[in-house]
Amino acid sequence: MSRSPVALRDAMLADAEQLAELWQPFLRRGAEEQLHDLASTIEQLGERPGERLLVADYDGVFAGAAFLKAGTYSPVNPEPVLEVHNAAVVAAFRRRGIGKVLVEAAVTWAEELGIGHVATAAASGSREANRFMARLALGPQAVLRVAPTPAVRARLTSRSPGTRQVTQVLAVRRSLRHARSVSGTISGS
Image (cartoon, rainbow, N blue to C red; front, side, top):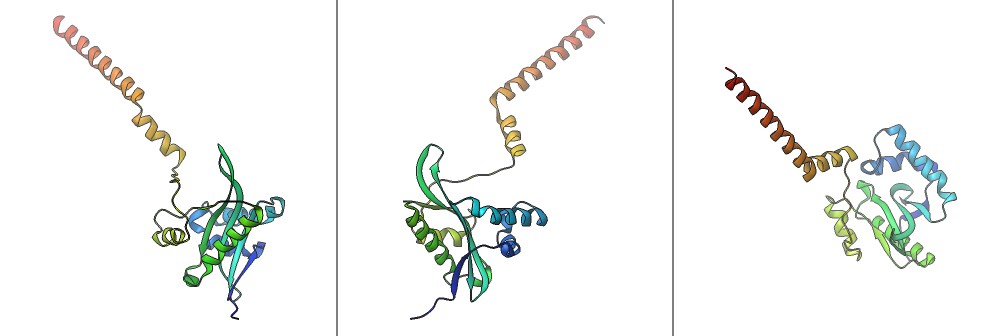
């Protein structure tokens, strides 16, 4: 019987720095805020029974992590689903079965909780992560799109038909005023 070099455990406060490094693309900016956010998350896990933060060690070395959260399919569909957030493996430990062990732990926990579906997300540009999830029967269900609020507001304003109409009306009025003033000047000469 061979023993796997991958061991799973619940995250500890001492893992915050390594989690911040692993999850850099997913965290808000500012190293101090990131560490504070992660430490708070780890500390609050005991108060939230539907959440777990799993850490994978490979021969005793931090190698990956995933945040698990029991929730509902959507705000309008109360069917239970286990969400696997930020499943990631340290680059030096990829292709050693760590991702599979993390997903397997998520599926096992979903079964224990009586949850019939598992959901996850992978960065749209990460071909490797998306292929990995597809091989595990996790198919695309939706596309999550994110943008800064001011950017969306600017696009809404610039593309709004009502805004264009108001802008056009004001331009026509300015042109008419200008034409009247020019014609008044010409006729008064």
